[in-house]
Amino acid sequence: MVEAAVEVQGVVVKYGEVTAVDGVSLTVPRGSILALLGDNGAGKTSLLQVCEGFRGPDAGSVRILGLDPVADHDALMPRLGIMLQSGGVYPWATAGEILRLFASFAARPLDVDMLLDRLGLRKFAKTTFRRLSGGEQQRLSLAVALVGRPELVFLDEPTAGMDVGARQTTWKLVESLRADGVTVLLTTHLLDEAESLADHVVIMNDGVVAATGTPAELTAAAGIDLLQVRAEPGLTLAATLDVKVTEESPGEYAIAGALDTEAIAAVLGWFAAAGAQVTAVNTRRRTLEDVYLALTAGATR
Amino acid sequence: MTTGTFTPAPGRAPLRAILRRQVRMELILTARRGEAVVLAMGVPLLVLLGAGLTNATNVPGDDRLGYVVPGVLALTVMSTAFTGQAITTGYERSYGVLKRLGASPLTRPGLLFAKTAAILCLVLLQVVALGVVGVAAGWRPDLAQVLPAIGVTVLATAAYCGLALLIASLLRPETVTAAATLIYVLMLAAGGIMFAAPDLGSAGYFLLPLAAHAEALRDTLTAGTAVPGVIWLSLTLWAAVSLTAAARSFRWE
Image (cartoon, rainbow over all chains, first blue to last red; front, side, top):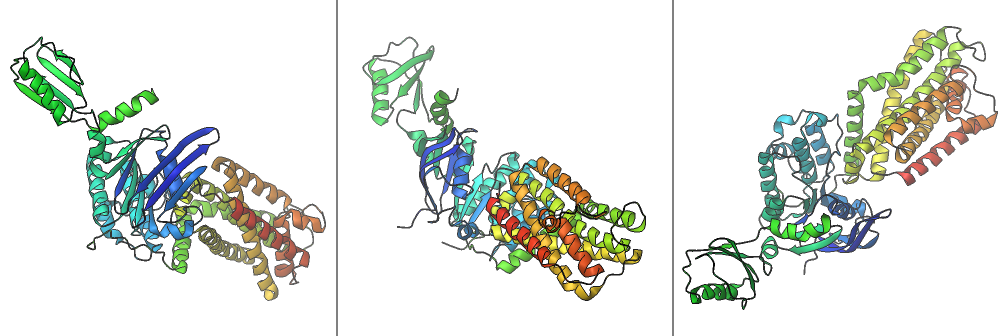
């Protein structure tokens, strides 16, 4: 079996008395996209720092492409593409100069002009970094991460500060990375970003993993569908079914609970048995947002 | 899998190419902040003309320019390799530039080497420019001992680079700027540039690298004599200790 691109086992990261990451384990298979989803302060960036080798974990172990990111730093760096959350570029250098500099560090770099085009930065090639907008700076940082044709890229909030168009461009680019066999580990607090890009989502909350799975698994986990039925008002529903029924407005019933096919059939059978005239049936699939809020609401505020 | 645009093909460019490009970038950025270069030479130039051509200060001996010009050359080396370098590196850290370079195939020794090499280029340009001004003002250097003069200058540059990177690693950028400027002014006053350094005998050479370097340049370029062994020893020690300390304490963040 091919070894995973990222193997994180029980990692703890402490800043003095504060524990930013408290025993996180995760695996990123080669050629896949994993999104670390969480609010600010959830520990995403701290975990990324450990994966990038900027610091060692206080406990646990990290293997990146089979190597130790601290001890094997020099061997690992040419194989990684790293996009930091902000800054990281000489303010008085132009976008073109920066990208060419990092391209010159690589054995087989991408074509700089092609990359500038792909990210809509061609017209800023001669603009100094400090004169670029926040979104343009982000796109340049992404280009810097990719120019060396890495096997694995770490993107820390890649679309933060981007407008809608730039975000779409970036998402398309990340999808073509996967299509071309690059492994991606990204952090985000945008649910739609995680849902549309990621093969695997790890939801972090207060330094621990709150949930993990594919976006579909997370949204389809037991009891997260909602059934809405329209019928005559005022029906008193039997408590025999293992679901929670509320009449939200006259004639509008909301049924929540473990709604697999059998349960839905039983609910509708009950309406039929009661002689009710059912005029509409809706299922509402929970979104990642519902899952996320349910997981993080209790702990945060 | 078909080959696409982003199909991984990682690898490090040859080290020489990496270093050449990084040195070039450091020099381009320095040139772009031309005012900093002028400023780094401005004070030494004022000292050269002020103390060299007037009797504003008392200097030992009869050859005023022969005393002042080598001191000014030593001062400009310190100004560029220590003060300028420390301030620049402090800000590069706060901008996250060092961290970004740390996450690239440029290694830590690669970055330290590139910074030192870029500074050596600058020092060469500045020393030649100030030397020409000195000669125009009437200084007549003895070039028989020019090689040892270059040798001590390289050692002094390395020592200052180490010190600059050291304080840039230990302090916040604002503090680095204040500390580097203060040390510069103190050395200008006490380093035996405009007037004689405090007479501490050989111990002075170990305490004040600027005084040691200035004295070595006077011995070689003005008097045409060899560099005293104690100065070689002092500057070698300063370079070795400061570079080791800098490499140990160096932080990307």
